[in-house]
Image (cartoon, rainbow, N blue to C red; front, top):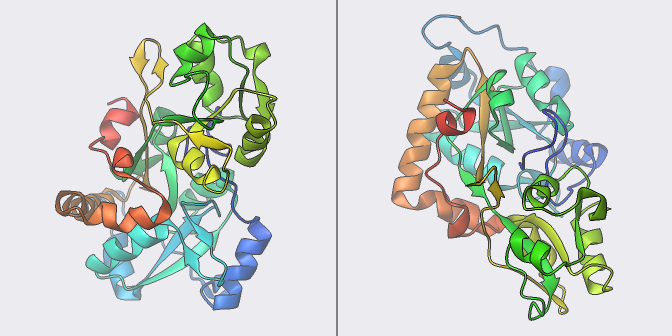
Length: 305
């Protein structure tokens, strides 16, 4: 998930998925969620990296905290849990000896509190790794990175490829509520008071199509998705925005309780094997990911360590 302006708000650049109510209904309909029958996992041992992995193997099921966002974790038209995070979790946890997944839908802001109160075992929602979050949980290394991209009119008539172009050409600029792209534009010299703030990517697309703005900024993942059925617009090539004079690249990863470093390390080992073999890209590609989203970033780098 993209980096929010706060620590536990929704993320920028994501296509809103189903509501929590519809997500819960969809999971219940498929019999995947048995919240009433869930036993709470005991507090992890504070020493030796925790024992959750062993307990998950014995139980045969892992509870995934998800927040219902496309393409990260959502219910498809057939009522099935899908998305890049559940798809990746299925492969890795099966390799770790845990065959079943139990999704636990919640609001994005409740993911870390829910994890730490043991409502589920892992956050599988494409959550951005930030120094603030690293104080509350431990992250696996990112399974994808996020670059920015613009929605522009077909042919990109104003030649807008990055925020410097937007400033230099005095383009009319829009992005979404709470999106990190607000900060990226301001860092390039665009006046925040001149930014048109819209509710989501679809509203941004509509603003570009109607000529109310020249450009809408989001993540490359979501701009590609939103222009797919729009003959009048296109998404620009992904790029890393400059923040404080340095390219800013964020990464999304699975999160674990701080005591459960043994599980995190085992997860990382399998993730690195998937990266090395190219299997990770094959798992993520059906959800709109490209090779531009593949990354060698580490959680340590993004946590500020």
